Length: 106
Image 1 (cartoon, rainbow, N blue to C red):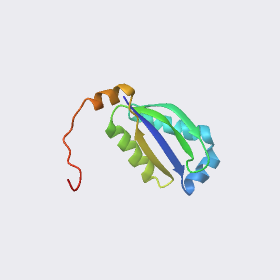
Image 2: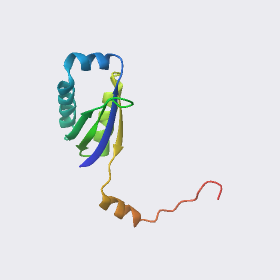
Image 3: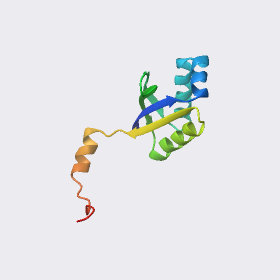
Image 4: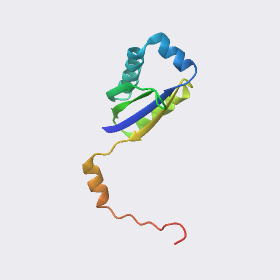
């Protein structure tokens, strides 16, 4: 499973829907969406300021995460941003790789 941090903001009718349905119903809607791609919700929090909702979920693969983001963002009622989360062991593995790279202008 791939773990993602998500940050979301309600837009326009999304805010009205949140006020009408309440926070637990919106969390349930995300749990249902995640389940439809074989994923699960680890944490879900509301906030105020620059982000309305944030949390962590697991999905089987990157394509599932992209499909969710595309579907949610296409509603026009919510704007979601995903950030893949890496374990310390994955960083250890990455640090042992030596990709070839030439910096611009060098």
